[in-house]
View 1 (tube, rainbow, N blue to C red):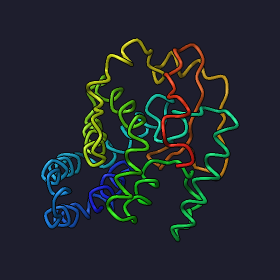
View 2 (cartoon, helix red, strand yellow):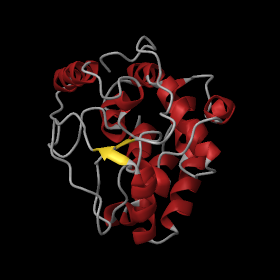
View 3 (cartoon, helix red, strand yellow):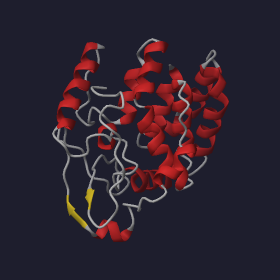
View 4 (cartoon, rainbow, N blue to C red):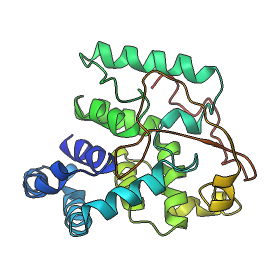
Length: 237
């Protein structure tokens, strides 16, 4: 599914290659067939709007949104396992899935990084890709709800993924579930950082001077974002 691959690219750290490839991405979307083509126009509009802004501003906004707290983390298992030991085994299982599909993980990324998982799904037949999206639909809806609450444009990409999955879940419809959560990316929450910790399957660089970041932090002094039950259906994905 080319659309899933493109959404994954848009959810990765913005770079010059993305800006240069926007016409090719739009052309690829224009050539899709139903059901992918049903969302192609909206995805193309997102690409045009997103790339119309400045690259440095987009990079800074990306780090602020996805790399400064747990609530909108793009590490899938953060929303299920947190820092528990179960997270390590889930990553091992996911790595095995990638290898079974003939894919080798780039050392820069953690296995549960959403753009990487979407790249994997895009390599599968459409029905299998949709099933993989359905497995993570509760996570997508939860992150989407937090983005809708912040009125952030990235929320549209999560709704599109839910549509590709054929899921009835939508981020906007789940805003009530996260209404009472405190932001964990505020200055007060950032000042309360007491530990920096993650499962280290790789050594990701810190977010500084517009560079790509994968560093995730734990916060004290804030409401911990709600976690999804471990049996939601994506175990081992």
